[in-house]
Structure formats: C-alpha cells, structure tokens
Amino acid sequence: MNIIAQSGKRLSDWSERNMPNPYLFAVILTFIAYFMGWILTENGPMDMIEHWYNGFWKYLTFAMQMVLILVTGHALAIAPGVHPFLKRLARIPKTGGQAVLLTAYIATTITYLNWGLGLIVAAIFAREVAKAGYAKKIHFHYPLLAATAYTGQMVWHIGPSTSAGLLSATKGHVFEKIFGIIPITESVFTPYAILMAIMLCLIVIPITMWLMTPKDPDECRGIDACLDIEKYAPELMESKDLDKEEKPSPIKKKGFADMLESSWVISYLVGLAGVIYIIYYFATKGVSLNLNIFNFIFLIAGIILHRTPIRYVRAISTATPGASGIILQFPFYAGIMGMISYSGLAVIITTWFLGFATAASFPIITWITGGIVNIFIPSGGGEWGVIGGIIGQISLDLGVPVGKSIIAYGCGDMWTNMFQPFWAIALLGITGLRARDIMGYCIVLMIVSAPFIALGLYFFPY
Image (cartoon, rainbow, N blue to C red; front, side):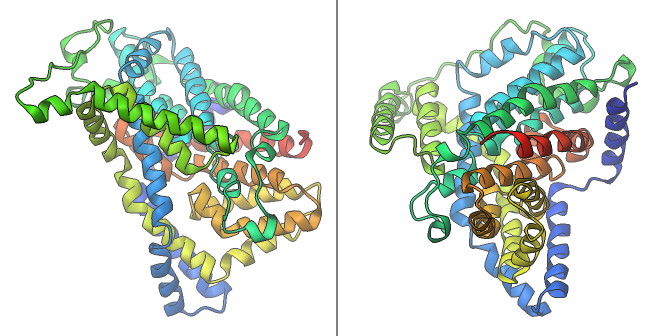
C-alpha cells in the first residue's frame, strides 16, 4: 500500500473518532478566538463578548448572498436536463479508481467556475456514482467519493466566483481607498491564477484522491454500508434499472391558480427579462463580475430550466435544507470575525506573519496567513474583509501587484477548507454522511498539496 493510501486510511480512522460536528467546531473556535483576543490584546473579557455580539450581525447581507449561491446552485443542479445528465455520467466508472477520478474532475471543474454550483453538483454526482456502483455490484468507497466531491472547494477562490476578487472588483468596496478597484483580469484571469488552477484541477487533486482509493474490496464502504438505502436511495430497493428516468407526476389543473403555477409562459417571460438584463449588464460593464450578478445568473437559469413557477418553487424548497447549517453557523463565524477584527487580533496576526515578507516571499506568506485565518473565519469574502486591507497595503509597500496577492490569499483560504468542515455542510446533507467520515481524506490532500501550491506561488509568472 502506498504512503498516501496509508495516510488516508489512518487519518480517516482518526477523523471518525475525533472530528466534531461542524457546529461544535464553530463553538470551539469561538472560545479559542475569545481567549486569544483576551490574552494577546488589551481587550478585557467583557470587551471580547461585546465584539463577539457586534460581529454576529455585521455580515447578514453577505451571509444571504452565500445562501443564495448555494440554494440557486442546488436548484440548477437538480433541474431537468442537468440531473438526468449527471445520472447518466455516473454510470461510466467501472472501478473505484475511475469513480474517484471522474468525481474529482467533475468537482474541480465546476467548482472552479462557481463554488456553490460545484459543491452541489459534485455532491449529487458522488451520490449517483455510489448508487450506480451498488446497482452494478461494483465496490466504490462512498466516504472517499464524498470527500473527493468536496475537493472542489480547494480551487474555487482562484476561479471566476472568487469572493476576494469579486469584492475587490466592485466599486465602493471597503478597501477602495487603500488599493483602488482591482478588476478580475488582474487576479483570476492571469497566468498566475490559471496555471495554479490547471495544476490543482488536473494533476494534484485527482491523482492524490485516486492514490487513496482502497485496492481491497473488503476495505470499501459502499453506499449501502453507510446509509439507510430505503431513505436515501429507495429506487435501488425496487429496481436495478438505472436507465429508466424518473418522470414527474402530471399536475392536475383545477383552477386559475393551478394554471398560473404550471404556466411555462410566466417562467419564460421572467427568464427573458433576466437574460435581457444579463446581456445589458455585460455589454455596459464588460467582464465586471460580482456576487450579485453571479446569483442573478443562476437564479434566471434555474427559472428557465425548471420551466414552470411551481417546479422552481419546489426545487428551491428541496435546496434550502442544505443551507440550514450555514444559516446557523454563519453568525457564529461572524462573531469570531468580530472578535478578531474589533479587538485588533487580526492586525497582530497578519502583521506578524507578513512582517517577515520580502517581495519574492510575500505570496507564500500571504498564502499561509490566509490559510490560518480561514480556520477561524471560513468565508472567503468575510475573511478578506478582515485582513484584506492589511494584505493590500503591505503588497503596495513591497511593490507586489495586489491582484497577485489576492490569488495568494485565495490559495490559503481554499487550502485549509480541507481541514475546516463548514462548507461541507450542504454536501453532507446530500450525501447523508458526517464530517468525520470524509475529513481524514481531505486533510491528506491538504498536506500533499502544500509543496505544489508553494512552488506555484513562487515560480508561476504573473
């Protein structure tokens, strides 16, 4: 057994015994941030509690934007034409290794384009691959498939849906007076970011996850060993025929309200208006992406693909439970942001790390700084709102392009997602697994990828 496979097995066993529920993870980090602020700054115990409370409500708008990305992405992923395609694609793998590789490429490619859509599509795809394997009596290791679906979160922040990049490209952003507006053509659409994405998406992530695939069928835990099949995949109890697509039950039109709910005309009119505005937006603003236009695009696409208002309402209802953990936990992480930001702890931590930097080493130190802070503030945009000003100012002082520093920060933010389970909440809801089932494999990837990211940040051309 290769060293990566051994590490995956051992860390998976460790994770199953010791990784707490994501909510408890947030609570533990809250206490750590509280005591760090109390000890390392001049703030007293009551000051830290006040900072915690004030931070709770500071990022409500941003939290809603994150929820919408997740929910509209989920609704799009289960739309007619999308979900059936994923089910057909899931039948391709013939071995456990093939299943992991295909899941990795699906997860990283789509998440690179949009983190919310990629997270949901990858989770659904991993579940469908596991179901297909069960039906064909092929041994697929379901926890590893789910972990592989989560690995897309290690590439998203150097892609078009980058929070830090989009926020820095938005007029009136909080750091505009420090470093101005940085268009995404100077951050994610540079050779620096594109080469990093190619390396991670095509080589590092797929091969690492593939190397952890169990070779012994007895070590594989299929979907039937992990879940209640009657609850999560009842169709497998009735038939092994995966070629038969499920068709929605016909809607009985009983009156005017039913006619409106089932009217494709209404959805297409709303969709047409949305498409007209999207075309107008890019025609007048160019490639000026931000969180709002991303959400709007996926909202309109979902409305059009679901065809009728009631189908889209049902899709959103199906998607919303996946965001419940974010709704609960985001205020706690906002509270941590409040303690770290208002107490001055962010300045102390960031300045201490970046104080060692030279122009050449600055991207690597920014990456490490972003990775550490991400554990406490697992929100790319929220974290950037706390430390982005310091990174931008030091970047200017050292003569490093701010766009390059945004990419280095993004690498750190997404790198420790493989240890921080916050964004896995929706995936866990779809796959039916626990954080402790998948995080061991993710931690191995975080360790293996570190030297590749460091070398890329140092040597890739900007």
